[in-house]
Amino acid sequence: MRPMLRPAQTALIRAIGRWLDTEKDNRELPILRIENVSSEPWHSATFTGERHRLIIRVEGHDAVTSAAFIAARLGEAELIVPGQIVADVALVRQETMLEAGHAACLMSFDLLTVED
Image (cartoon, rainbow, N blue to C red):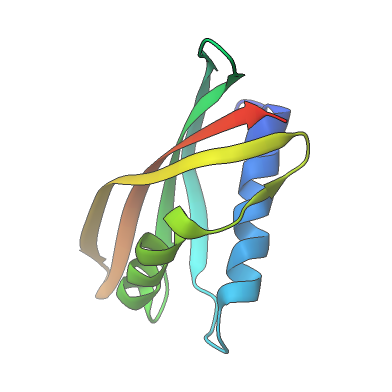
């Protein structure tokens, strides 16, 4: 059984899904699987928020191309998360593998959200 997602995690995943839907440029959307998501509280002198680690598996016909598109553009995307500002998105690891004759990419992102 998978653990319950926290509201901020669910909102981030939905925001990324909405972003992909608007950025697809008439491409077929890849199969995205959330492999893992974790969060921890974060504070600075003036802000309160959370640090998130999101691991996504990209599968499908154009997995490598789709992963490259996501890697190149997600960091600059305007992700809308109610009550939060997505202050930073960074790709920290990307792995490409062959599974049953098809490519799949595993991508790990660090994200920072701060309370709006």
